[in-house]
Amino acid sequence: MTVDPWEIAAREFEPSPISRYMYDPAAWARDCVNWEEGGGLTFYQDDILAQLAEHRRVAVRGPHGLGKTALSSFVIWWFATTRDAAGIDWKVITTASAWRQLTVFLWPELHKWSRIINWDALGRKEVDPRRELLDLNLKLKYGAGSAVASNDPSKIEGAHADSLLYLVDEAKTVPPETWDAIEGAFSGGTPAGLPEAFAIAFSTPGPTAGRFYDIHTRKPGLEDWKPIHVTLDDAVKAGRIAPSWAEQRARQWGKDSAIYATRVLGEFHQGDDDTLIPLSWVEAAQDRWRDWDDAGRPALEGRSFLGVDIARTGGDETVFAYRTGDAITRIEPVNSNDTMATTARIQAAVALGGATPVVDSAGVGGGVVDRLRELQRRGDMREKVLAYTGAAKAKTRDLTKEFGFTNTRSAAYWNLRELLDPARDSQVILPPSDELTADLTVLHWDITSGTPPKIRIETKEDILTRLGRSPDRGDAVAMAFYADAMRTQASVGRPSAEFRMPVSGVNPLARR
Image (cartoon, rainbow, N blue to C red; front, side, top):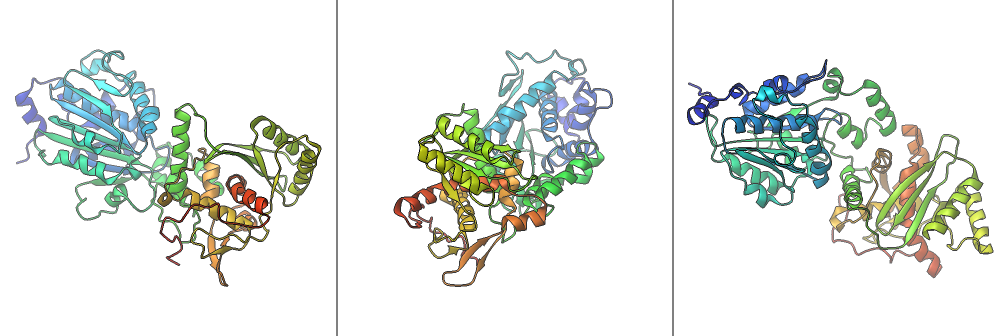
């Protein structure tokens, strides 16, 4: 005969009016939150909470906009208030792939929902923000919740209580050691009593690797996890995502792109063999930008450059990419085809920041380069402009020195790929931008025959034909980082690849 877990707890602790919610988090969310008129759980949120009570380990993947942060707050408040009311020793451990996910999103959401909870229904006063609910800590009578970095599994493994809840946010890149530390809490629990443990993980999907992916593909040994996929259709049906938003992202990013698969469809994306830069590499660089921004944007070391991709037609944008050292500090798009206005803007940026301009010299950009050179000869601009011609011949090699490039554009983008490669301990910083992410992850590449074989990156015109837009932000960033090579070539009077760092020992083209 199945034993109700609450019956066991009730024999040890004084019963509470909220005892009926101990193993029914969906009912807790329905009854103990002061919902606005028409508000409430979506059908898939209700199901996720029910599955957590039944399976104890749940991993949820889905698109942006499904309401995972609010749902995380419900899970934490349900667990904390019910265990505390029952007098059970409890702990909540929250972790995430990036610390800011906890400090900027999850815990502020927990604070927000604390003001909407029906505390009368729970039989207690609202939590005290000075003693009980702190920035990253929750301290009630019988237990506590806290935030722990995912790269410190010892603190996760060191959590002990009669009732434990682990919540993993943006779980796709959380290291396996953290998952193993969480699993240790389940070794002593039983389905029908204390001690007990629960774990719930949320994430938009990423590459086809890692423990979160393994859970969703039912790898051996992980069958006790319940994987849940909230689809785009689910989110649209629940009113969480507008169909027009999804349609616009398909036009912007392409339905076959990694960013569309992960952020709109909530699907893992294996990545094509001919995709130039993996989505995970770009996202890691953007996480580094967020860390830099959260730290107050401390001074960066290194030379400053300004990559400028000049608009070719009325539908394009002129894009300015500001770089210092390893960081693109900001990207500025300008809707203007006025070459004099563009020249003045570049001149001002050089005067204020001392940046060396790298300017697309194709088409109308040639006029901008000529005017900047004239200003430099007259002494009205200190820095010498570097003229970037994507179609020009390139004599540089990749890091392995085995492959050449069909043109400068291919060399510049491959240089950016090498700089972003995590196998080389990349320190590149890129600003969070969906447009930039799409530009960098949409590119295809191949290798031409010949001696040496050459790497060829998809042309700007081919992308325009395929997607109906031009990758202006990506081009500006690639130009800004290629400035090192251009300066080296200019200083010695010939192309050179000596500025590049030694290869890590892994040939990125070995699979070919």
